[in-house]
Length: 67
Image (cartoon, rainbow, N blue to C red; front, side):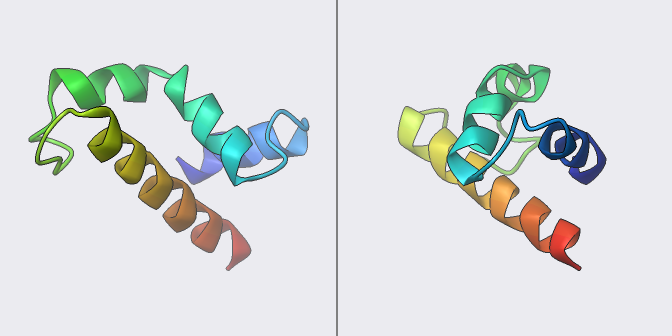
């Protein structure tokens, strides 16, 4: 995830965390979250749970990129 997000940051498609979450909502990853929530550790597929998960993924990816 960090490699893909780094490319999007470099070409200025992602400029902040909200852009990163928006970018993820258009990805195949987003579709897989609702199709197979147990694989990704989700307790449900409500919008709130998916949104929280995406926020956690973005924060973790940003931490990896900062290091």
